[in-house]
Amino acid sequence: MISANSIVVSRGANPIIKDFSAEFKAGTITVIIGPNGCGKSTLLAAIAGDLPLTSGAVSLKEKDLASYQFAELAKLRSVVLQQPVFNLAFTVQEVLAMARAAGSTLESESAAITRLGISELVDRKVTQLSGGERQRVAIALALAVDAPVLLLDEPLAAQDVESTNRIIELLTTEAKAGKTVILVAHLPAADLNWCDQIIQNF
Amino acid sequence: MRNRGTFLTINLVFLLALVALSLSVGATQIDGLLSALLHPSANTSAAEILWQIRIPRIVTALIVGAALGVAGALAQGATNNPLAEPAILGTSAGAALAVVIGVLTNVVVIGSVGAMAVAAIGALLATLLTLRFATLDRNVSPLNLVIIGLSLSATISAIVGLLTTAITRSDARSISFWSFGSLALTNSSDLIPLLIFTIVGIALALFVSPKLDLLSLGDATARHLGIDPRRVRRVALIALAVLIGAAVSTVGTISFLGLAAPHIARLIGGPKHRPLILQSALLGATILLLADTLARTIASPNELNVGLFTALIGAPILALLVRNRQSSWSQS
Image (cartoon, helix red, strand yellow):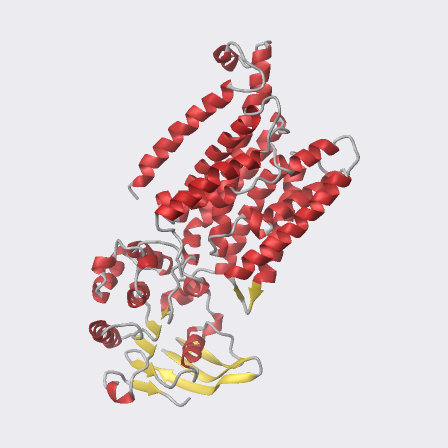
């Protein structure tokens, strides 16, 4: 579905990602782990197409990621940032409706709200939510788009045990339904029996 | 928002009452106001004052007020910054400098279509300069934007001040009057271009407004949802420049309205940009008409600076609303 072919990402003169290659198949879930500052988020951002590559290429559906228009790409892959930005006091429901730009429907938005367990938050203002709640809203926003590729940067970082289990279950369900899921997490490799591929020491 | 309808009604009723009041007060007492209003071409002094002076001025206040309110909403939405407004981004100063240069070189006359076009270009260039200087590592820092915008505005305004005081020609007084912000110079023949510029600006603003909602999620998320933030910002800044070009070239720089109107509108009706733009237009029109009516009647027959009253009305309302309610902007 999506693959990285010898990608190099540098900031200034130093390379952060040196010659990384991997394949992410449809119907699988991949976890990127490693110590702070090792470039996990950079790697995910590069796969998302958010960073210019020094060399190499990311291909999505056998086509170079860089050749997609924003609007096309939005329907193919969703991204959840580590720290979602909510600058204005929209309600959770209003934020979810913004996924319409990428093809969500009222049904897909309500389904995402239910699956993230944020039904009681729909009328709350996003600016007044806790870190974990904001992150769940951001995941719901990505899920509402229903794109075949789902990229998440530390979606479990601010979650309690219940929400962590809920999100893991949700992501594995998405993968079983045929999606390609890639996430960054701070979990010991021993706790990752639910994923298909682990990426570390890159 | 359930407040929205109620507030809209109150605002409209107040605005109509204000228009009626503004028609009936002025330096000269008008007898037979109603008959003068119904017979515009009657050969009476009442009809003349009403149709040649007061009505054009009231219409100007409404149009310019709406333009400034919408311009503020666009500035804040496009930069994702609650402090952004035309006077802070350098937009107004850029427009003023362009007009002054145009007038001094005898290319344009204050209030004309030419002046509006020149002002819009100056407004756009100055705003782009602010954004360019405030961009670091592909991102605009919110604090840098305000500091650089203020510095650029101050620099350009100082140049405008120097140029206007150095003029020794016959229209020097009216140019300096204009540069401090005044609706006294409006001419009824300028109303049509002013209206057209403002309608074009507001239409562009309404067109781009749903995408401004997405910009509040940050550029990265907007992109992930299929929106090109740079293109959205470009359209918003062009609309902003058209509106400020029209407003500044007609009445000079009027402070605080662009900041206050959208903030008050957001606190009442929520942050969604399409209704916000209409509400900011209505509030801007109301505040400017009230301010101008006060400016021309309080010390009649002398005219006071209208900016004094836009600040005096807009600033306390804004401060009280923000104090008593959660601001619409993220506190972090």
